[in-house]
Length: 196
Image 1 (cartoon, rainbow, N blue to C red):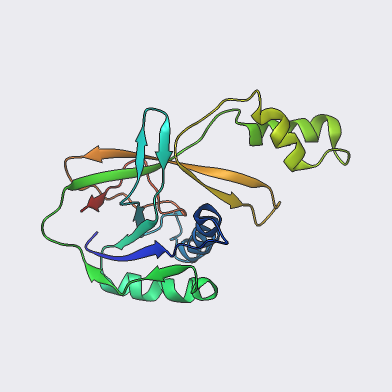
Image 2 (cartoon, helix red, strand yellow; image 1 turned 180 degrees about the vertical axis):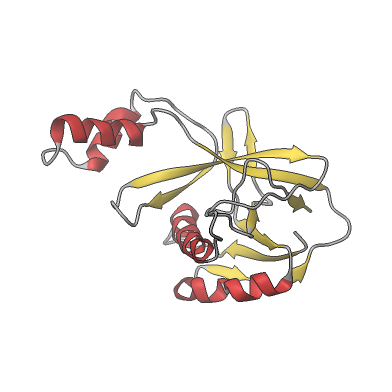
């Protein structure tokens, strides 16, 4: 991971940053899907330089970096093209080289929460209340008594069934760079991205 582009959410009084993140990440996900190989591996990894998670409090922050091994991969991804309709809400830098001096490496991985309120709501509607209970109502019903997870996340909406779900993101520090490719959200259980 030698090159990157940095995305920064532009603060808005009218639109909260978590809402903008959901739109930005959805678009990036589509861009990553178009660039996956025959094994479903994506050559782009993401990091969140302002990521915080400690004592059951966490946040993604306002910045994201998208990494690639070479400049052409980032150029061909065309981040600005994918985020064109979000120009007023996100600033995208040009392609930059990763600095020599790094703080280390990190794995940003997706965490699947078993039996979260979204999963319980979908299951409940399917089994008992299909057509009589709205999905959002069911999520609220299970949120009150469901598992609570404090890991930072970005909300997404499925383009196939239109259900909303959370992409929980955990960060683990690593001593050395490892590359095994990334998933379609730019996350991986093993591949690292540089921290600086």
